[in-house]
Image (cartoon, rainbow, N blue to C red; front, side, top):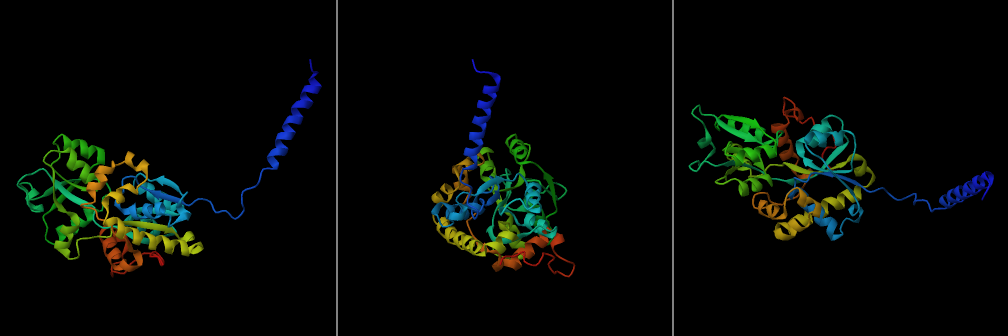
Length: 329
């Protein structure tokens, strides 16, 4: 039997050898950049398809191992932007603008979501928005998500001669439950949740696209700059060539994906099926087209839209309060 002294000596020798071996492990390459962080939403489908397609094609090898995090709502998105937690974000334009107005170092690179909101109803005889009005002449609509910009857009439709409207806010799951029970007849919902509801609620149909209602009232082409891709100011400054290739690759992929809906659905990572099943995403493309435009090419459209949904982004004289450099490049 070994003496206590010899046993302690042996243990110390083993520990010393282990520490020595650890000290000889090759150190990480000093110049290796950490993986980029992408903050996105599993509920957003069309606006991020071009990005995932470019990554799968190998056009953007720098993003092949990026760290993906999912934000839950606009508050969550804004928090990550203000804290500088991320390199690339997929989100609503008003979320990006609000964060930028509060000092977040974020730059809008591309607008990738242009048609998303539908007015849905189970009323068989309704042909236009005014047909949903009650005896008092007010159109009452359930709205999800609770911070939906569609409400501000419809308020502008009302201001320009549309019927008076009142909104009831609901979480997506609650609205789905209420609609299934027949407790809600009229609602405003984004894709792909619109497609989910159409599948589950008997008699539900699309009365009108919110973007078309706005165009009828105020002019335009039936689109609004709703969602897009933003990049941290740091990444834009340190790796402008990557941001330029990112924008170019998404534009190229959008053209190809718009002509091949099956491939468009297939480019989304497999884990996205836990949020929205691929068959639903495929059908949602009928109302939510794939389109990418550089943010710098649609500044006026973005500013006009933000003036509707985020009044603090503009001054009383119509001038934009967005910080210099909000639009990349």
